[in-house]
Image (cartoon, rainbow, N blue to C red; front, side, top):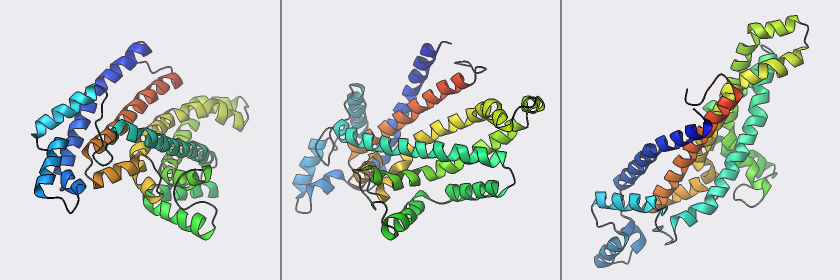
Length: 309
């Protein structure tokens, strides 16, 4: 199958998944205790005021009617109005999406810059102190929760040493600690995977043949082993970017980063149904697009893989 048709088929197949996501988040929000009209009417509102607000928001209609209206607006590219601000949800998400993407790209850069070299070095220097240190750091990155790592980084590098701001956004220095926190788990994951793949590739016959021809070890590693070892790593790095779009929630809350995750938490707390539905849907779309891009890159790196195979 040619790449264009493959991409079209993948995007078309994603539509039922997105529809399922809209239904799941719609039902989940209605199951959470709390009435948005009661929250936004205020403590001094009368029962009549609350009922009138519920009518204005369309919350007095049957659930299947509310869902149908939501899907109908969605088909026209309209995510509705935020209950909290009264502004279009698409405008609310626009600025915050940019901040979350900035944070995710920075964390991916940390992942590639640290995880891949660390995994290669651990495999080439197997059973040395470097290999053991790599495994120890990977274990910490995988097991420690992101919010714990974030708080520790704040205490050491922001409060104690004063090198970085504790929270907020606005400069490159604000980005460092959130990116390190969000990248901790992917770095550990990629380092372990790269090490395992490199060890497997370095034991292949064609690598032994290259060595027997007298090639320098550096040439064997970089020219013959690395490309094949990195194919699974590319897949994992791409999927980690999808994870970061949704997994940045805790990191953004810890560092008061004005991104999509923090907006989602605030919207859930205030029962802002349209905002939550729009934010979750945007994260789901991002995850699906990243999966398609990863599949295409996978086929580019390994010619044995064909589109649609």
